[in-house]
Length: 333
Length: 202
Image (cartoon, rainbow over all chains, first blue to last red; front, side, top):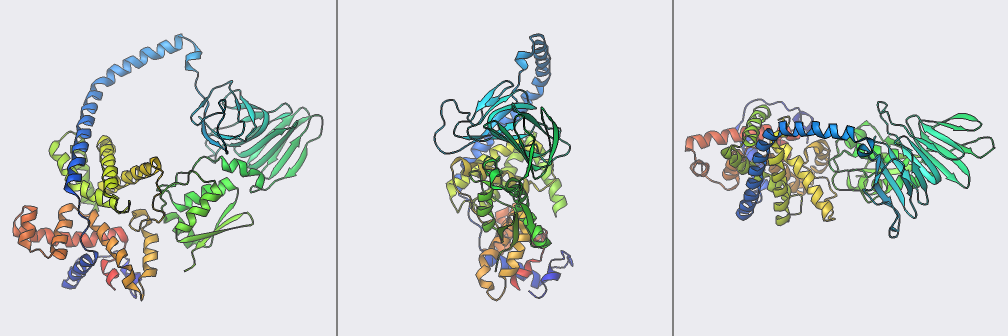
């Protein structure tokens, strides 16, 4: 232990003394033999892999010949599509990524994988629904929500609550405008929620800026603002914290984070963002350690908060939630 | 070691994707046992499951080998694909993967080292299993013949003649392989874990 710091310098003296060789011998004896590989398993796998390899070689050779033919076919098909008008090129604008909630789905409820086309109306019923929009935007509809998808950038909220996350990248050109009969909310790169219940429209901004307008004028809502719009009334401006309980329904519909082979740091950043909390490390060493800790398994059935509770204890770190912060420190020895 | 091994790996991958049968056999002989042991330690010693995962991995690999660009060792690349396949199998069967982060997973080396340096104290004997895992993982990263030569010499106590016979080379060549294997082990260990193997014995 005394020379631990020197031992890690990676410098070789190029010599391999008898003592050095002896240490290799001792280590190998200590480790013992590696597990044997069953010959019959090797034979079975060999046969399967060899067949697959032969198939892939044949396919690749065929592919070389078929590329010019495929190119020609593509050109013909493109010409056909253009001449037959736009209805054939109608593309989905989103798909159902997740359906949340207890109880069985009714016949008319959206199912995971369902595609949404311009003009479609979604009614969520008893279940919250998360949509993956083809431009990368994440839309979440609470239970008892009805929304009409006018286009990839506009939807009309007839009743219920909707949450939009247009992502963090400033280079993305994602935008969504949510209309209600009272007014409209257009994001400017943000995360926000619009609720339209009993004739009141509420726009809550978790991050970024949202342009809101009604018949009386237009307003800019910033992070932490909650605007309430009512027919023929002045706008009421209130405040909402990014980790207020009222965001929980949206967190429950967060797209699953695949933790396999991702760092603890990436995972925590995602969880912090989804829960609206600030991620704080005890010190830089802990942050570095989180960056170098690679996770395995899955947390797809957990909410972000549940995922943090189940993942962090499996590492050499511990966490606590305090005043809107997720605080990470080294686990007590 | 790493740089020359990368060029060896690239050449082998090129030959396999080019349809060379000998190269395929070499590829399989070299990597199946290593991948099998890699998987076995991650599925609690469940041999049939390890076999299935390795088969899925290798079938996928032979289809995707043309995409191997030689930026990492072929074995590292295979392990990454194997981890993904393992994860898929766990998901398909709703199995729980190990919640514990494997000590030897390369990107987590520093974390593993930190825990190791804590464990290797007065109660050093308690961490023999960890030491064994460091050693075994290092052996898996060596070319098969080097790992075999070291195992035969130091664990099974075989003579140089016996090693030569097993590897189908002369005794003199076996001695040379053994010597290179020792250097490769030491360098591989240092490269994987960033400390000298002797540290584990201190």
